[in-house]
Image (cartoon, rainbow, N blue to C red; front, side, top):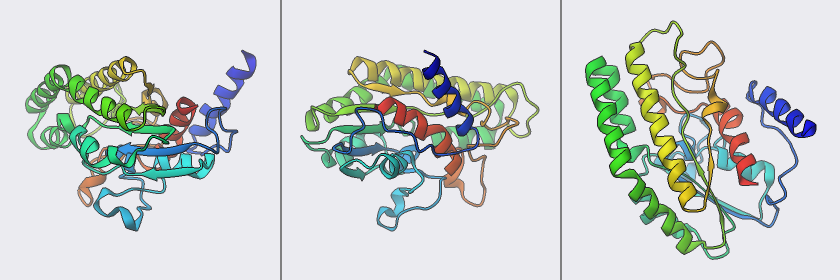
Length: 267
């Protein structure tokens, strides 16, 4: 128990500096693993720079958590087909075919685009508090009524193609630290956006657990590094020069937030 607590403290401290730890791989994270990464922009690494030429508009970054896992754990095979803008239907139709019966590890981050992450944030920034709250509320209805079935379809497709794989469903960070002095959106809008993300993550966790998959919850890892926090920000604020990266993890967010949580859960 003491050793486990010490390891947790060391990981937390290093993550605060955005450090990728060279820790021993978990027992199941063997060099024989055949790993395929699926998902949207949070899995491809939009906002983390260092995009690979082959990925084109999918914007797969060498700083994204799947690539960091590959670089550090060095599985026997690795392929990321994660793509910016991907929905659950995109994952099923365009990404799941990359899986095979011999795939032993799969990660997937998806769901945000199905409920309109981008349009919600655009509404909140451009149209004010009332419209922001209404947009998030509409998305929450979709999360409750539509997303469980869509996620279930993704998970069933993964099982069909890679029946023996360990599957890790990776969630989203909550964007804002509340209770601080922060310019931009109102406190009400920020709280409502956080509420929506928490509902999305909780719904995804429930669906993943029901499918027999593990859920990598990154929310606590980003605490202290969110927008409006006083620490180093691990998320891009609204970027008028490059709108695509807005509200996505930085390279430090991928290495200090996503990667340690995924690596721990994948074991």
